[in-house]
Length: 370
Image (tube, rainbow, N blue to C red; front, side, top):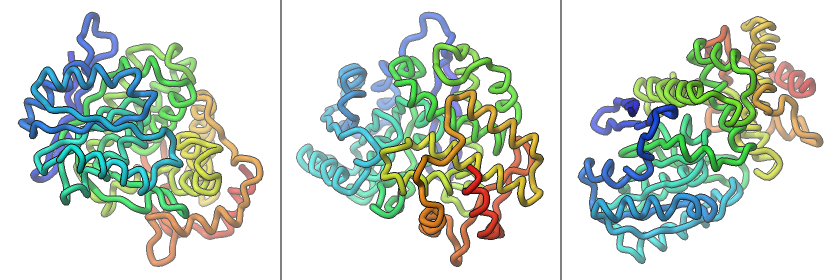
């Protein structure tokens, strides 16, 4: 039994396919990758992109599925980690694409987490001015967030995702079974994005998370809750993207926690905290800002922070982070407009607002307190 969520966009709608976690004897959706892609009538040439660890676990299965469906498959592995999300890595992808003579009807398949998905999407967006991309996310964070919506890109030395393009996938294929191989720290990182959806969009999801005794390891989260996490988070992302594909307004709410989170990642060289951990810190800060401005109840802020702690995520800035440098880094955020930093701030569980009227002294005060 598979849930199919539609991302409805003019001329380029696509499906997110998610099999039920608890469905007994269900075939792995990864093994059906080739048939899913064949149904889309894509060109025969495919470049599978992954990192060495993910490829070792799932690469051969993905290639076997694609080959059995009639595709001509080449592969490329890139080093894992945010610090390798650079134009140098994209150049390697271009070289492999050229070597294998990928055409405009060809497809790049991203088999991996958010880093692989972002880079593969960007390479696909720019190779021959745009070829197909299929996202096969293997981390919780990528499943619920980065694989959906067409945001692609790489980092600049002075800021995250400053180089990129919108390029929607033809398909997002989610196999919950692959989460069993996900390191615990990466599972916790994905929970940050799940909590985000509860705060910005889905109060019922937030309540389901509160009802769970633990959120820090997959083995302690019931299969029914994993199914709900995947379907509700993906539906939330699909709903928002369908209404605002290129972040003209509403889609900016998906960056809740990311404004300060991205700055923390950048200042710590993408080595000290991962993306989910940085977003968790950013959500704590945004919640405190909202409370300071009288927009959010302190009790709701505390409920959010309790969930973040339940997921084993940090609620404080890393030691040694310079507050003034952090405030300066906020000016490089992609959402800055006319020199003003835009924040997504909650007003109640499930509802947020976008504002650029946050006084710098409030930002400074909150950052000093966390």
